[in-house]
Image (cartoon, one colour):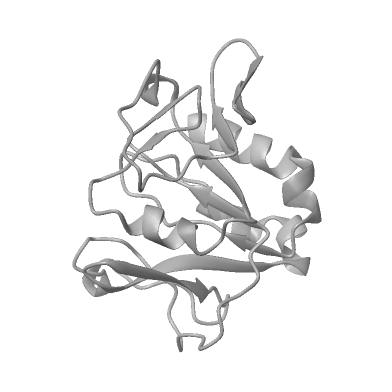
Amino acid sequence: MWSAEIKAKILQMPIYQQARHIMLYAALPDEANITSIIFDPSAISKKIWFPKIIDAETIIPHLYSPEKGFTTDSEKTPYQIKEPRGKIQSVWPDLDLIIVPGLAFDHAGHRLGRGKGFYDRFLRKYPQCYKVGICFPYQLVNEIPVSEHDINMDLIISVSNKMSEKKDSGRTTVSF
C-alpha cells in the first residue's frame, strides 16, 4: 500500500511530468516498489533507465525495453537486484530525474545506503540531475551520519498521515 502511495506522489511531481529521461530502480524486499511506473501511460513518452551493476564499484544507467523485460530470479546479479535485459548503452543518457532507494533518509536530504557507495559514485556524475529519495515512514530519521563522498537528495518522499514540508540547505522533505 505504501509503495502505491509513493508511486502516486512521484507521478504527480512536476519534475516527473516534465522529465524525458528518468532513472528508477528495481526494489529489494525492504524498499518501496515503484517499478510499475513503467506501465503508467505517462511513461510512454519517457526513456526509463535502471541501474546495472558493472563491477564491485560501478553502476551505469541501463535502458528498459518492454520487449525484453527484466532478468528473472535465476538471472539476478550477485547483489540480488533485477536489471533490464538487453544490450548496455555505450552513451550515458542526459538524465533529468533519478529516483533513489535507501535504508534511511533525514530531513536534510542525507541518505543511508547499503554501504557500497554505488549510488554516491553514480550520482556524482549527474550533479545537475534532480535526485529524489523515497522511503517508508519508519525510514525517515532525524539525522544520518554523513561523509564527504555522500550525495544529498533534492527531495525525500515518504508516506504519513499528514503532509509537511521542510526546507533545509536547499533540500525539501515532503511526507504524504
